[in-house]
Length: 204
Image 1 (cartoon, helix red, strand yellow):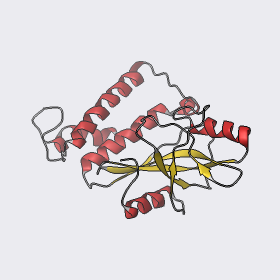
Image 2 (cartoon, one colour; image 1 turned 60 degrees about the horizontal axis):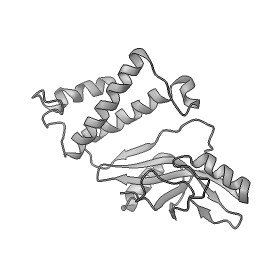
Image 3 (cartoon, helix red, strand yellow; image 1 turned 90 degrees about the vertical axis):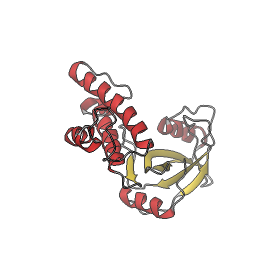
Image 4 (cartoon, helix red, strand yellow; image 1 turned 135 degrees about the vertical axis):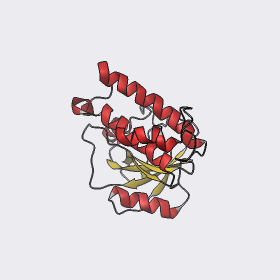
């Protein structure tokens, strides 16, 4: 689901972002020059073409019943003060976003990690979110924070590839409704909390 349906969850996420604002729902209005997932250069180019200004903030959505998420994002405020989301999304079914402005943050050329809140109370979901944070940490360590494409080698590459496989397995495990008391996703026969759950706690 793209747009969260529970106002209380939206408010909790906005509070976690440390901002004070009300979200607005915007239709997707891509421009001919707009590239998918490149909101910052897209809006900067639009400002150069037609004036107005770039507005920084967060687009919010909900992933099933598991967690709610915020991604740092930029939209265009036209010269008449109307807000537009001009950046195409990865999925053609996405035609709207829920956006909240963040007047305290600007884009400095470095990626900003998504902010996520577990809605389920399931510790398996907590582990999935922690692994997602670990993925971001590896991708943006040191000089990689300023790079859009990363290059990993040796032990770090092996660890990253293992993390990506684990994330995919954990996503399916989470979606199956598994809990920490369920048989582990690896098929060891042990409960998850005593097998991969223990390993993930140590890793993150």
